[in-house]
Amino acid sequence: MQRKSLDIWVGLFVVLGAAALLFLALKAGNMSSLSFGNTYDVTARFDNIGGLKPGAPVKSAGVVVGRVDNIGLNGKTFQAEVRLKMQSAFSFPKDSSAKILTSGLLGEQYIGLEPGGDANNLAAGDRIAMTQSAIVLENLISQFLFSKAAEGKEEQK
Amino acid sequence: MILDFLAAIGRGVREFVISLGFGTRTFFSVLGASGGLLRRLRLVTDQIHFIGNYSLVIIGVSGLFVGFVLGLQGYYTLNKYGSEQALGLLVALSLTRELGPVVTALLFAGRAGTSLTAEIGLMKAGEQLAAMEMMAVNPLQRVLAPRFWAGVIAMPILAAIFSAVGIIGGYIVGVLLIGVDEGAFWSQMQAGVDVWADIANGVLKSIVFGVAVTFIALYQGYEAKPTPEGVARATTRTVVIGSLTVLALDFLLTALMFNK
Image (cartoon, rainbow over all chains, first blue to last red; front, side, top):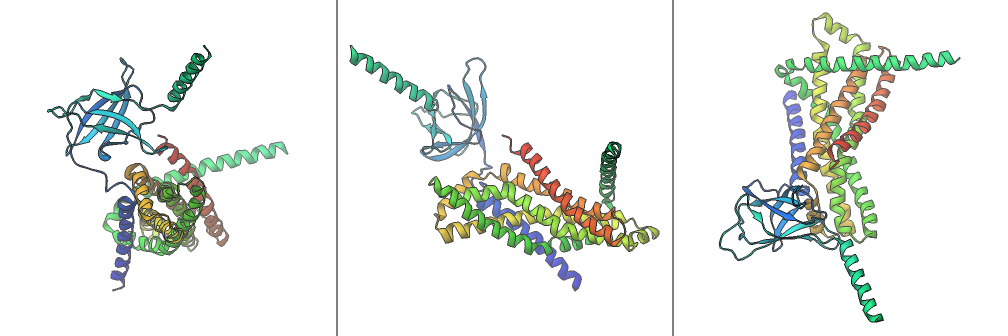
């Protein structure tokens, strides 16, 4: 009897640990949003990806439809080559366009996918042709300053 | 005078290297003696009960209070930037990545490690280990190995409980007392905590700490001088060496795991 009650306590201890781990994975972690479903790979080339990181979401109309799998540099075109893992449940027209967007003012960067009008859908291994790079703040500011300076010169004439 | 000083340094280094070698040898002998445990799993469950269940109260209460404090301090800091919705993320990340494994290991060294050292040290002082050898029972297999595996199993479980209770503590202070938005608290946490990069690596950390702390406690007890003073010194050394090892290992593991 004594033996059995000890076993029950040890069992309870282990079950408690498993429950804690489950709580961490489901309630605190992203296990519930992690999809183990089928995916297909699509690539996209960007002139500048800004602060995009592997694992960033791919969203269409705000809904997560995939994740950034891998980021590399194409040695010939010197463009960033981004591989996207798209969920098989969603398919997009071949002429869809990809943009790098930022959630909120200081939020993380993600890829926004805008569907096009082509009758054929993107298949595994396809490349998204139309892309728009991340907005780099320094470039924006320098453009703004140059245009301001140009305006000033015209006024002086 | 200078020669004495040099000799003292030399002796210190020599003793350190010797204990390192003895420690490694004992570690592998314990691992080697573990095979026979499969036939005597009762020995391991007994020790899990002794090491794990009795540590539950201190781990649970500490976890709750660490969560409370993280909630309060995190809110104070985040509020300055107007981003107190990220409180859940802050609490969950600090607990799963760092505080859960590390604080649990430190408490574990104090709560379970000392009792292991004292127990084995007294067994040695009472010549029980020698008596076992006389009866052709291997003390490494009968005494050290079950305690070692019990510690290795109990430590990650305790760390997971610590983190989970801590997050609940952060929730109690942040959401229920201060009034951070509940939806933002959980959704920011879920968006920012990765199952593999954060939670699984935290579990891995706690397993490594479990191996280190349990083995240090066992080794100190096994190598203790068989006198009351020797056992007392060994118990102190368990806490000091165990805690320092945990902190040093934590730095190494963090640098290896989270360097992306």
